[in-house]
Length: 236
Ligand SMILES: Nc1ncnc2c1ncn2[C@@H]1O[C@H](COP(=O)(O)OP(=O)(O)O)[C@@H](O)[C@H]1O
Ligand SMILES: [Mg+2]
Image (cartoon, rainbow, N blue to C red; front, side, top):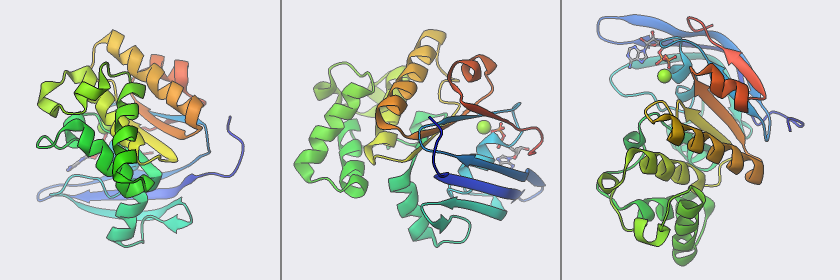
């Protein structure tokens, strides 16, 4: 499963956050590699730096905090910490798929689900208008959403939490990424839906051979899906 060259490499990553009244070294010298087809789990207690470590290099940390990053994060021949914001946005779009803890941080509440997926598939997977529409419906189906033709025309607020999580997985896959990053994708869901979502991620990985970075504080999840585990404690 984990042969080949790394497709994402983090080396000596240090991330300092500066807000108005506080500064914190959220990530303190972390190194790891991700190879095609493998699942790397990142575990650690709340506040240990999991989210900052994975979203920081992608430029996805919330606004309102100043981020200072040192070290290296390499993907697709680029150094993420030094490329321009447009290049980073492009790389993020076509190389990384991100599943957030809260689906509404990825989905646009003003747009129907299907067209959001189709737009992503046109933009980053280079599909035509009609092909992108078909792809969106098929992604919804693949993500375990019943009646995908109907759901295509639904707004996010018309869907349940579990269905939104699936829609976000579909959105993350629409650009056909090499690396799927999932930040506690099941925390807000009940146990049955949690298990279904994890199985879905695993199935997609088997079929597409993409790498998965799975952030979780659930050691049971780690035991069932991870090839390797990174344990974070106070950013280390
Ligand atoms: N927007 C922010 N502003 C200030 N501090 C933050 C912000 N986001 C995270 N932090 C701090 O960075 C550290 C790591 O947080 P985080 O990566 O969110 O932890 P985890 O995902 O492991 O729960 C914590 O000390 C947290 O308080
Ligand atoms: Mg987090």
